[in-house]
Length: 361
Image 1 (cartoon, rainbow, N blue to C red):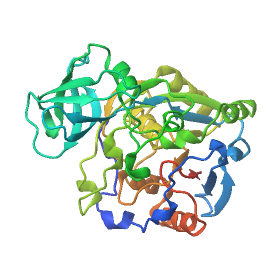
Image 2: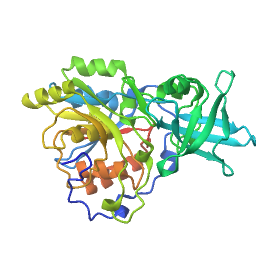
Image 3: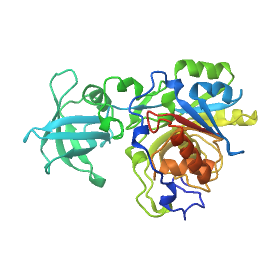
Image 4: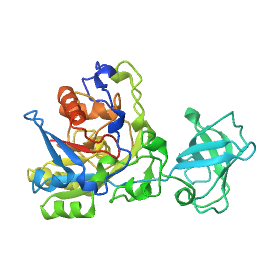
């Protein structure tokens, strides 16, 4: 089975089955001062019971011998705000990747009034008020993104650290980040730069919570999945199976594979921290048994998917009509997820990226 296989019998599902009314006033606009104070809706699959806890309760909810698997990706300050040198008009871009593998040319999504031409220059001001970064539009990439060439030969992530802004999703302050977001829209275990969005379930963890889990005898392992913009894209097709699933780069190292095997052999459970960790672990088990993996995945987890690695999932609440909502429904069942979301809304949980969490166990 390839990393893109759907391995599912849920192909007949209608996208409308994954819709719900999202109250705008429940979309969290700011993170909590204490990450672990987030509310936690525990979804008990065996009984259908819903339990209200807090993220700080995880050490007592889980058992000694369990293994939590986190995503160590690091969010890149990929949002660029500047102006067109020729017209002075406002320009916004989002760094996607080095187009040539070296960083001399970037692939970006861009938005501006009018129709820019190849050869135009964009001036991006740094936060410290120094000289601007000059981006020259080279041409179009596949899919409509722009290819641009910076006038500075520094590594892309070094330039983004100076000139970029935190790429908050549009439902948080219309995407306008503040200084505090540099830390708060980043997990405490972020290591490898590459994400255009945070793996939001991981935002609830602190060093103290990680220490409490370790003291309880709960193991920790890591994977990496660089979150792309496709994670926010709604399903536009009538049937879920017709949706073109986005691709993201991920890696599951040998030490994580070994940790999973040791945990399973001792009777422990594998707890994915976020849908990105789940997607990486299940990609690594695409041939039936988990093995080290590195590369692109377009695995689409839909109802009927045979989960091979993940037992529990800690996840935030997701937008309607998205592949993430389909994924959690595949794990817990559509009816139970509908009931859980209705309960969370009734109890006024804080929703989406800076919001509260759910533990499917």
